Amino acid sequence: MKPKENPFGLSDDNKRYQTYNYYLRKKFGQKVFKVPLNVDLGCPNRDGTKGTGGCIFCSAKLSGDFAGNPCDDIKTQFDDIKDKMHNKWQDGLYIPYFQAGSNTYAPVETLRDMYYTALSFENVVGLSIATRGDCITEEVADLLGEISKKTYLTVELGLQSIYDKTAKLCNRCHTYAQFLDGFNMLKKRGINICVHIINGLPFETKEMMIKTAKTVGELGIHSIKIHLLHILKGTKLAQMYENNDFQAMSIDDYVDIVCEQLKVLPEEVIIQRVTGDGAKDDLIAPMWSLKKFCVMNEIDKKMARENLWQGMCVDK
Ligand code: SF4
Image (tube, rainbow, N blue to C red; front, side):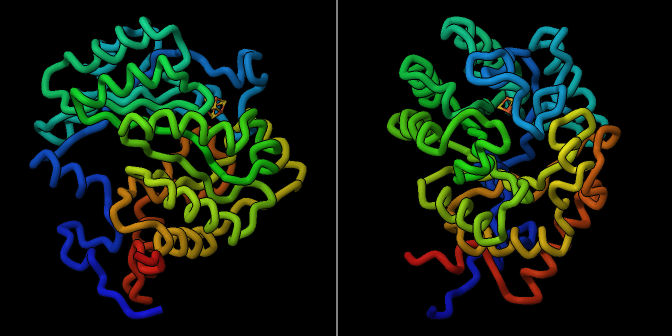
């Protein structure tokens, strides 16, 4: 492969990949905060519509461990979380983030009300909505298309892996093809799509994880969240781990795989995350993941040491 130049050498956060912070600062000219909300729409993978029990790794809070309190209305949640953020930063712009559960899983008029309510808050410059590919219908996609013409909208689709055998093991209750159906409905309407993948799922090899990132990168996504598999108390995954059915990832393997994934992701894809926040009290393994900044530093160090950068293995 011919040598290329590192396009991230001059980024103001000194990373070798395009961070979300960097992108938002460039786009909006100041700090932008995502405010995680929990509207408790549930999930078809828990209520029997698609499956029961949920994904084997999903926490009791439906993967929204840092989102607001679902007993409060959206405005109260938004204000509470914003106030906590202001203890650290004085002001900024906001993107309400419907995080927990599947946030397109309701009648379209309910969704319309919920999305436009969040958009009406002061200093809001966009909206982020997390859901599953199989919770996108043509009607929902029309609503999202309408909103994306008015604001900076990102729809986050959980995929985790392109491999159906992994999805089956994880009780995702959808296939990669079904994910693509929802993905394409959004894509057709020009909506920004962020895809969520997980490294360390049981029985996946390094090659499989890299292939998932590469395949997703080729879909024309706006951004990606790369997460580490957290083994949380009370999950099916925890039982499997305690039975020694699979091993948790080591930090060295994780850093190595993320660097390889960044190399095969196109340089225009925004990297929203290179690791996740596990709920500390519920985390069983890997405990090293609690040192999130250490993990991020190790990724940066390896990329600098080996002169790697996002997109270096993508043919243009
Ligand atoms: S689809 Fe999302 S919210 Fe539903 S069980 Fe799986 S991880 Fe949890």
